[in-house]
Image (tube, rainbow, N blue to C red):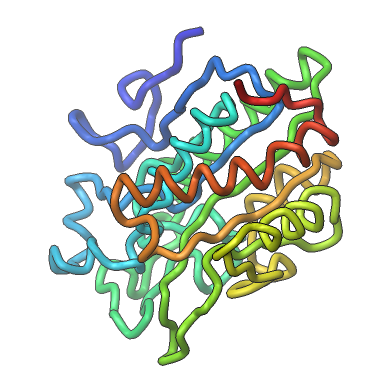
Length: 269
């Protein structure tokens, strides 16, 4: 299948040489699982001039989930599951927020003012939706339709990372498991992680899967009855490739028998 690129589509804010609004990793993966990574990238298209932000801001957690893309790709390899990763910084538009949320086009993030998000017009917001938000979510929908066309009900796993300290509170957990109404993956996954030596797990910590403004799982997985879970890994553990690979392995070990029972994932060899 040929994947349309920015050159083939009309994305108002993406120009020649800019990244695509999403990327597919391991698109031919055979597992009945779809991985998504909402905050995979710190990229900005050239026309947006980084929203007036200094370069150092792009290396902070406000711009992207540090290490999340690496964890997603390693987990994709381990499970042999396709993955969809967002192509641009959440500071432009947050793909995991309802468009009506005040944090979809955030003006101040963790004390950092985002000049290019102040007093946005509805037209400017619409251009961002058309360029970044809609293409990413359409890519997720397309992957789910491919499963559906084969009669497969996949597991839906959203990968994020979080800071080790927030509001001067140290986060002891290494992995957070986010869920709301569907316990099929989260509860046995938590039990498996808790049984591992040296792994500290948060049940709906440091964030809750019941957050009313979250979007991706609520939009794609819940209405279709797909078994799903949100995962948060602490950023200081996965900021480098070695750590991302190690913790992706821990996630895969915790998920494998759960996914085998729920969606028939074949054991790794």
